[in-house]
Image 1 (tube, one colour):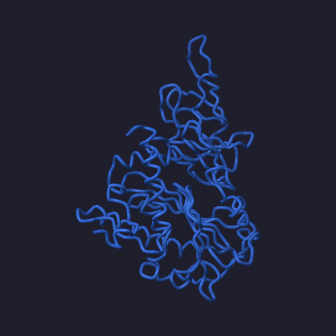
Image 2 (cartoon, rainbow, N blue to C red):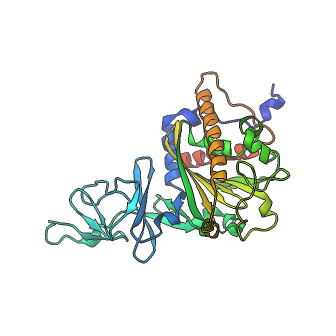
Image 3 (spheres, rainbow, N blue to C red):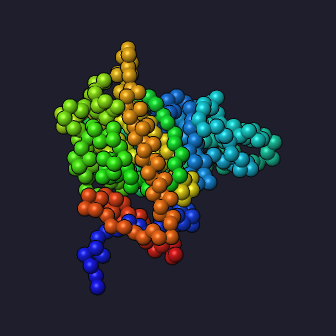
Length: 371
C-alpha cells in the first residue's frame, strides 16, 4: 500500500555521499566538464601574476599575459611532464619556466626556450596545454572539457539579475580557507536552506527571519533566492549595523535584502547591501572538501580612513564554522548502516531540485558513456 509519506520527495541514497567511485564520476561530470569558478580577476591584477587551482589530479595555472589577457594552462611541462609551479600563487618574471630542464614559455603559453633539442625541433608544436577560460563580472571561470558551451549560456539570466551589484568593481578584503570533512554536495545543500538557522545560528537568527524572502525558480545550472532583514537590521554582521555605504548600483529593494545563490557546481554567491561574499568549493575526497571564503567590498569604501569590515568577516566566519560542523555531522550520520533517505519538507524545494539535477546529469552521463 502506497501512503502519502511514500509520495514525498526524499534525500538521496547514502552512496551519493559515501561512494568513492561515484565521487570520481561526479568530479569529472561537474568539475571537469562544466564551467567552474576559479577565483577573482583581482588575484591576477598585473601581467605575470598567477594562482593555481587543483581539480582531482589536475593542477591549473591561471595567469595574465602582457596584453592583459587572462589565460589558463595545465600545470604540466611539455618536455617530460613535470609540474611547473609548486606554489599556490605568485608572479612570473615575464615567463613561465619549468624547474627541471629549463623549458621556458611565454605568459600566453608559447614555448620560447627548449635547451639541447635536436635540429628540426619545432617550438611552436609544444605550447602549454590550454584550459578554456572566461570572465563574468570579475569572476574567473575555467572549463577542462574540449569543446565547452559558452559560459554565458551556463549562467543564463544571472548576469542581468546581478548587474546592479557591480561585482567586477569589488575588491578583496579578507580570505579564509577551510577544510571540511564532508561531501561537497552536503555543503551546497546546507547553504540553500535556513530551516536550520533558529537551531544552529543564534546570531544570524537575530538578524534575519529564516522564513523570509523568495526562492528563484530552480534552474538547471543554479538555485537560490533572497532573504530579508528583521526590523532595525541593515546588513549581515555581528550587530546588523551598516558601517559602510550601500553598493552604489542597488535599488531601494536590493538595499534591504541578501541574495544567496549556488552557481553549479562550486560557487556560493552571497550578495549583500554593502559587500559580496563568495565561497568556492574544491572537493578533495568523497568526504572532504576545501572551501575558499572571500569578502569583497567597494574600493571607494576601502579607501576611506577608518574603513572597517571585521564585523562582517567575524559574523560569517562564526556562521561558516557552525555550518561546517553540522555538515560534518551529516556526513557521519549518512555513513551509518541505518541511514535511509528521509522526506524533504515543503520548504526544502531547492534541495530537492538540486538532487534531481544530480540524478539527471548522472543519467545523461550513463547514456553517453554506456554505463
